[in-house]
Length: 250
Image 1 (cartoon, helix red, strand yellow):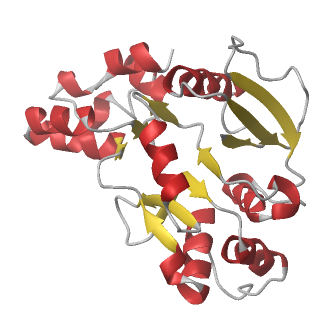
Image 2 (cartoon, helix red, strand yellow):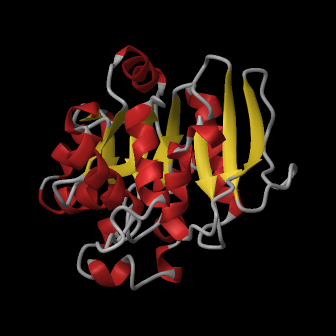
């Protein structure tokens, strides 16, 4: 299990919570590796478990900023040759991760990711990565500036572009519904609460892309622009899935 934490965009507490969620939802022994630009051993606090070993490592990002720090995970010189599951810190794990791990281990794909909810590209919030020549090409293309003339709004656009050019068949996607968008569920709940609940129950992971983030959902009155003012006449949506977050994210 791998995550990346760089800069000050998200609190370290979110990484600690992510590690705890992984520990609760993956029964097999595993390492949880945090790649960061500040590799302080005791930086990420959390309850120790018999089956989870938390490691903090230097990302060695070479000046990569923000989301683009994730591209360094495609360098086998950093991560080695063992397959791994990457998880963003802005998500909530609500059920067993074993199906994702099993699919990753049995797949021949170099990368398994989320099919983005808004655009016809990869969403890189949950990635199974099998280090090989195709994944290494992502880092090589970035390092060599092979697409320097193009503009990429985030890491996932770059990853998708490299695979589309060099190995489109090596990139596949998780089954629909395994990773759900919080924003998409809330939008569905406006029209059909039962359908939204059914989709949620089929999801192992809930991703918070854009706004709101989990802390804003849990405290809507502190963040009215992200919650209350989005749906002023539907108070049931102000803290939508708040109880779900208290159960799994805290």
